[in-house]
Length: 159
Image (cartoon, helix red, strand yellow):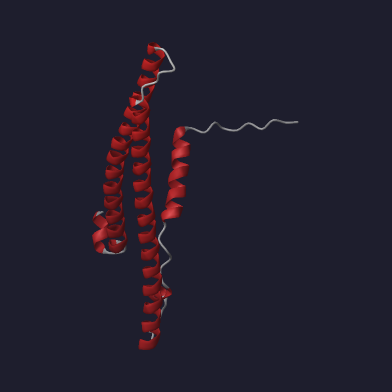
């Protein structure tokens, strides 16, 4: 059996591959036929095609609004869950165990308090990261929208 030699992939290769995949996913929908079609459409055809495009755009907007709602709800539930976990660990830390010796009880309490600390840190860090991510997502979306709006115009030349 002959063994084939493959080139080792570098981090750069993988990064470029991910960028290509991302570009494919973020490509905008193809331009409507109305803008590419030659000749002139009468008022009825133009009105109908604009209604179809409007309905498609509205459906996309509603899907994205639903995604944002779901994501926000998921974030709330994660935070609620982390708070609950922290409070459960705090209860465990506050319980006085009479069935174990003092050293073991101190170790159990330290372990519980460590988990309280970790869950509280998760809450703080998740909130910080999500705040940054939300801001970055809005900035990215706005820049992308502006680029799409200006695409094909003389203003896009400077971008």
